[in-house]
Length: 175
Ligand SMILES: [Zn+2]
Image (cartoon, rainbow, N blue to C red):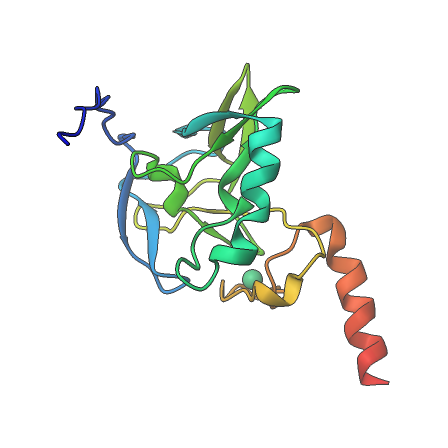
């Protein structure tokens, strides 16, 4: 049976005059600055598929099953948009998904009127790698080791609010 031709929407990759994607020492690919970026700059929008909270929950449970075939997939690409919808950034046209986590980041994400932006929180020199804190919670933190190489690296990808908990846990393991 002839397959019905899908009306394919062509979505071009998100671009920003500030950045370039290339290999990273932290993980696989990373996003680097093409020029000096002053702190406060909106660098690139984090785009993706708009999904309901319900769909979002379903996808968040997926990595447990899919992890082996596709270790990159996971709830990690899902951002809260508003009370009803989330954004799943696991799409090829979302260039911002290549930005790596760091325990000493130079960017953060901000929801500005329903759009997720990657914002510089300090001046980033030309050639610097863009990073933000992925903000993971403590659940299964051991599955997410961090290789950000910053002086204060926690060893795991974790929201800063949980750092104290992790430090205490490490201390109690030692004693
Ligand atoms: Zn780190």
